[in-house]
Length: 216
Image 1 (spheres, helix red, strand yellow):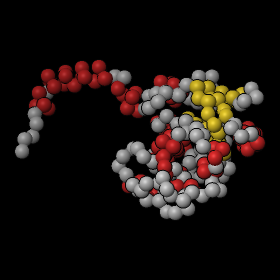
Image 2 (tube, rainbow, N blue to C red; image 1 turned 90 degrees about the vertical axis):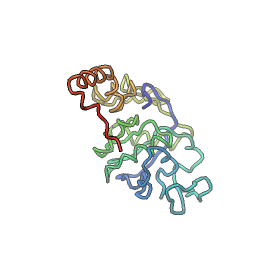
Image 3 (tube, rainbow, N blue to C red; image 1 turned 135 degrees about the horizontal axis):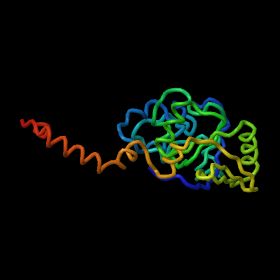
Image 4 (cartoon, rainbow, N blue to C red; image 1 turned 180 degrees about the vertical axis):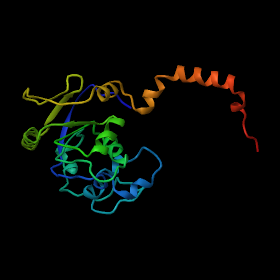
């Protein structure tokens, strides 16, 4: 996955509490066995006026003009501002896939559902927890100023506003290490590839029958 070090990006405000994973990526899109192509269907039932289906070309689908991500001022947003309990509902990993493939690198909210929170880290999407008062301020600023951007410095664990205000956030050392270096679970394992190869070679020497293949 991509490393996360310092990111500056346009903010999109999703002013809703308890946004569940079925709203983030509706159930019909879970049929895909691929891990790609979910971005066009992020918040599908809110973004479009028709019912989306897997494999459908979303280019010419009718857009809901009232939904925040369809407003011109938020096109290209890479930081999502949300309310309490974001990512609740089912444990589908497709939710962070869809958010990341749309273009979001970070989500800021007062709280997240636990499984969604963990899935974000595994997919290079940084969930940032700030206080409700801080999030309120960011919503006010985002709504007031067209082109409002935030800078998120993971190493310093700071969210920085255009006026120089900084909000610190917490992250465990292990998660921080993985995000800074771009390591998902597979990446962490592959760091030990030389040891794995050595072990497999030694095991095959001791138990050569493991190398036999079934033919026919």
